Amino acid sequence: MLPYKAWEALELGISKDVKCIFGTTKDEGNLFYMMNTIPRTWLEIKKMLYSNNYANKFEEFKKIYGHLNEKNAMQSISSDRLFWVDSIKCTIAQSKYNDVYSYRYDFVTFLNEIMELGATHATDICSALDTWKGTAYKFNKLTSKKRLKKIYEFMHGGFVQFCKNGNPNGNWPMTWKKYDEKNKFTFILNTRPSIEYNPNSKKFDLWKDISLYE
Image 1 (cartoon, one colour):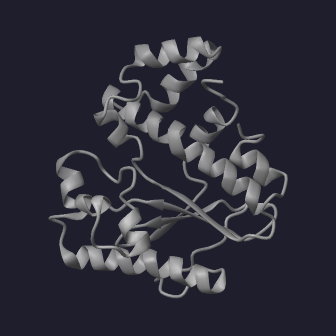
Image 2: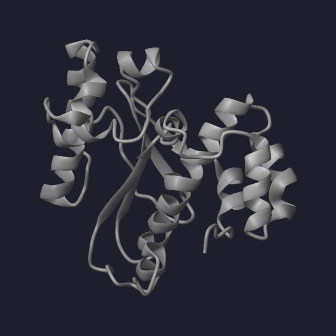
């Protein structure tokens, strides 16, 4: 029903006057693997690519993700396809018009570590919004209040600064640099924040021209 995909609309300048923050969690797909809603074997990946006329990409997938065991490879593929690749497309498109900041949320709660979910989908919500209740907060239970307070202060503080000033900096131990197509700075959100330049570039090159299920 929509005339354009999100990054296509941004590429056309539909939000050229808007400063943005784009980001995902590091392990978006782990939750969906647990829920059996994504391919779970290399054979299923092969069938998926064949059905969408990308059978020639299978060996490249094996090259990029094959160093992982099958479960972790499926989780990583899911994270990239469902969220990360399209988020980066939006980030690149909007950065041509206005200030854009990119993050990856790497903070893993105690419960998520035990359940082998990692920094999975939706676990950044409470930190971003500084909420200590609701369904999303269940992921944070059993995690020390000290660790939670630090990641909450970092992420929520950055979001508040951005809402006020159009710039998330102000309470970081380092500068969260703007993202552009040349300098793909990605802020790694954790209790010890860091910065990565163009993370997972080989994965993005693999995925960027693939359109599945169309």
